[in-house]
Image (cartoon, rainbow, N blue to C red; front, side, top):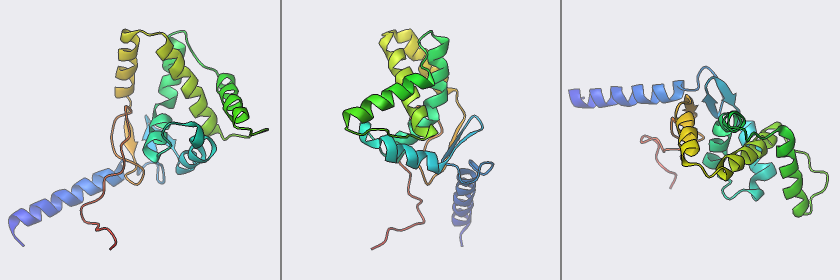
Length: 172
């Protein structure tokens, strides 16, 4: 094996190890945001329970919302346009009743996404570019580790689709 191949193999192993270690303090997490773990169960619950009400119910889109959720809720509250859990519940009741579903029960994860949605709408309704810039800066400041099985990216702005590992070939 040439020296260049050994070095590139070492780099590949170190990169893979670093990627996998990102969630190692929270094994099994879909992502970790500022030390808060987001479980794969939460991602599945949101996809199953409210996915039909969302424009994009892909795993990266759901995970992006879950990553941003608490920061957006806190940001909205600090700017006087907060959304309560009850506001989120009202949104869920409204969309489920419009779909003909009665007495729907939602997980905490889905309720959190609904509260996030109301909070984000409240912020957007301010129509203030400076506030939106502050929100973007707040999201950029979050420490995010995404499990490579669920997506890629290290910022809260957007979780992208998982990146295929170069040493894994697709089934033929």
